[in-house]
Image (cartoon, rainbow over all chains, first blue to last red; front, top):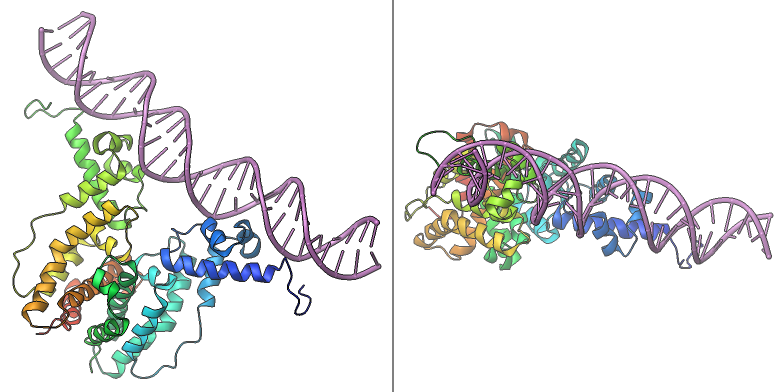
Length: 186
Length: 186
DNA sequence: CCAGTGTGTCTACGGTCGATGACATCACCC
DNA sequence: GGGTGATGTCATCGACCGTAGACACACTGG
């Protein structure tokens, strides 16, 4: 194990952390299937074979990255601040969770894990907003808003829509929140 | 060549058409990279090697499918009917063009071709709507609406959001149009 | 100094991908 | 009726994928 504060030439904890970090980045940028373990190893500066050793498989590394990003959900206010949510997601960029909305995983376990995170982070809060506003079909509205949200975040970082990518983030967040909020009453 | 009306046992035109049809379907369902030439051949009931013979490559088959779908753009009204557009896209389901918005092709030619179609079909009409409404940032608004639109259509057919997938199409189109139109004035 | 264990490196396997080209089969024409 | 081009079938190539395992090295405890 680690000998106190001295830096070791070989430290599995460091290697594991680097792999997890690189995996999170690459899964976010390209999604699960399009990132290879060799890519992850290269970005982490770690031999890709260590993924199998420390995480068991690429899929389990994905799950670990999903859960790591799983910070505590924001306090469930009655009315979600869409502009804040949008700003946060635009800043963080795409994530495996968002990809799973638009393109399901073939592996049901991976899909379920991703949707769990989405549920806790955005879906529930948006649905609650629709409910307290007394709107009909609150769940459908929440899912519709989430779908649009995902489209905006992914499109902005994809770069195919030039102005959306180039525009100031605050402007996108403001306009986007206006768009998303229009079916949540207010 | 074909001998009048008699059906031939071997007819390259039929094989080509079947491949194109199958390719369009599969590229729409799964995107470009995730569909294999073997899949296309299987669905078409045609040997996948004929893709190379008749279209040169998988990429060129993709371009052919893109262009085939390129029916004449709807008449450019001053105010786009978002509910109609949404209904049309929800009915047709995802398409290679929509995928290209959220996930760029690695091949610039494929990406450019896809964006050309998107431009003619959706972007221009939406932008024009924003312009005649005298809104600031018409292009950004058009791209934002397009991004949200793509998110909704892809998410609905992906099936990860259960109610969005299960809901009646007309309801989705109505709510979606309300959402999209909120940044286009009116 | 030596064993034992944690850690890293490298090669290779089985599988799938897009693409190629050899070969077989069919239809037609002189 | 035999040649000729069009069409279809098949085996295979090289590249890349995730994974596994053999091996080398570094550090620790005796």
